[in-house]
Image (cartoon, rainbow, N blue to C red):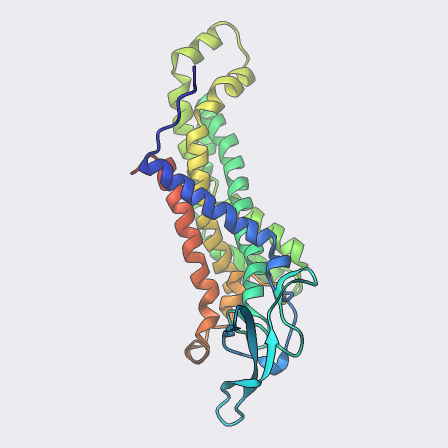
Length: 326
């Protein structure tokens, strides 16, 4: 017999499209060292706040013009007497130009650093903080939720009341206090680990409650009662029967928590509680555009904030498809 093909439904197409988009996005972030034309910390002080580069064509060959800054107005003007061909797969980069030509696809910041390159490198911090923090949160929530729902009694009371206490704490002010106690210059790896642990450790309560409710339902199922009646150990029942029952809510919560935690990292870094310069994240890149005149004169500084929109929509579309909505 030939296997039955899975019927294509709007929900399946939506799920597959969201998955494809997110996989390609994270692959681009991992390959930032190849896709970005410059290193995230490389500065070009003579090209501060340069506008996005326009690519022209001579026949089928892409070229760039040099930029000259008008000293009276501060605007950049294309110098057509200086032509730089766009080169591909050179020096380990997907595309680049020979010096003194510069390519800023999304403009440059106040230090002359390429915003596009920093956007790709910064996505490593923002996206993977959200992903790892969600895994930490779900790991804690899964353990505590299963324990509370399966064993019940005082275990359930202690864990759920502890979760309510966690939700009542003013975490933003506690984070400010913790940051004030830390040294001014904290290594980037340590800051990243702290962000993951803090964001993930704070958010375990909601997934734990949802998993607890699923375990309470599974505990009353006939197959669980039969396994316990035959003398199966608690660990066997949990591993063999309870955990598979929670798989759906775990995957759904993962897709819901990741965008929330990405926004949490962006917000904390924007407030100065995340990774510091020169290492980029979408939050500290946005912090450079805090002043109104900077945004009006250089609107491309808002690109990190705009980049979060398709990422969040992709995860929310995946969560929506997993929850069975059409």
